[in-house]
Length: 433
Image 1 (cartoon, rainbow, N blue to C red):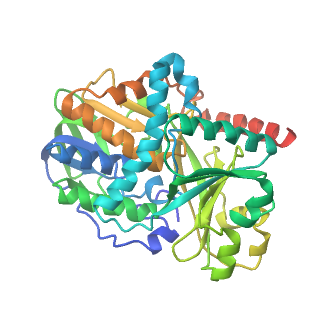
Image 2 (image 1 turned 120 degrees about the horizontal axis):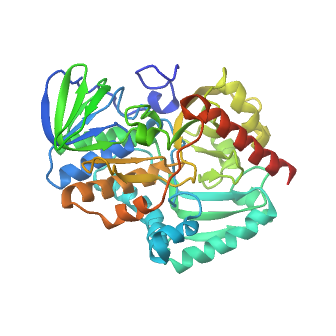
C-alpha cells in the first residue's frame, strides 16, 4: 500500500484489528483546553492522561488512528528509553541518568497496567530475549544484567549461553547467546492504540480523523486550522513524530523518517512454531540493521527490520525481507508470506527521544523521535506532557528536555541521503569487524 494513502496499511495488524469504525472529520470551529495533533500512541495517551486530570481535549489525526508507526510496528514492548543513557550524564547528572534508567523499566509497566486496568484486548504476552550476534556482545550482557540488579529490577532475567540458546530460545544457529527478560514482551500494537482511543473517547476526548492540520496560529490561545474548521486551545501538543513534515520546522529537522519493514508468514503448524521460538518470546538481535521477530497469536512469524534511511521503500517488501528471514530460519523456505508492509519511524541523531516545550511558544509541547523504543516511551512521554500541561511543570520532562538534539544536516533534500551514507559506513565496519 502506498505510504501516503489515508487508510491503514494492508498489514497483518489491520487484517486482525478489533474494530476500526471511523471517527468523524472536523467540520466546525471548536474550543478545548488542549489540542493534540497526532493519533498514534503519543497523542492518544497524552489525551487520556489529560482527560484523567480533568482537562478538555480535542485530538486531530490527519489519516486514521494508529495509521503511522503506532499501528505498524513490530509489537515489541521492551524496557529502555533508547541506547545507553549513561552517556547523557553531563547533561542530566547521575541522578538524571538513574531517572532515565528507571523510566525505561516503569514505562513498560505503565503500558501493562493500562492494558490490564482497561481490559484492552491486544494479545499481550510477556517474555523477551536480546540475542547476541558475537561472543563479545554476549559478554556485554553480563554488565547489563548487573545494572538491572542495581536498579532493583524484579522480573526474571537470565543469561542463555550458546549451547542452550537454540534449544531453549530460538531455533537458529546464528546466535552466540542471549539475555532473557520476562518483564518485557510483545503485543498487537494496532489493537492497543485502537483500544486506547476508545478509552480516550470514553473519558470525553473528542477525536477527529481525516483532519490534517493546514496551519498553526500561535498565541496565548493556539489556533489549529483544518479544512473543515479551526480548533482553539490554551495548549497544543505536537505528537506527529516521523510525519510532522514542515508543520513545525523547529522540530522536523531533528527527526529523520526512516523506513522499517515487516513480513508475516502464513499460520505455522504448532510443532514448527515451537521449534522456531519455543517459549514464544519477542526476539531482537544486536546488529546495526537489526532483525526483530516474534510469533503472533495465531502462530505467524512476524519478521521485521532493515531500517532504510534513503527515503525510498523497496519495490517488493516481501522479496526484500524474505532472504533476511531465511538466513535466521532456513526451515521456512517453503512457507508462504501472507502480509508485507512498511512504515516510517522517527530516528534522532543521538537515538534518544525528544520531549519538551517550544522555547518560542511555551504553550506548545511535543514528543517525538523514539528511535525504535516507541511502544513504551510514547506512553511515558505522554504522562510527562500531561503533567506539565496540567500542573505547569514536570520534573521528568525537564530531564528529557535537558538532553540537546542536533538538527540533521543537508536540509529536506540531502538529510536522508547523508544519513544513509553514514549508516552504510557503520554496517560496513560491522561486517569487516
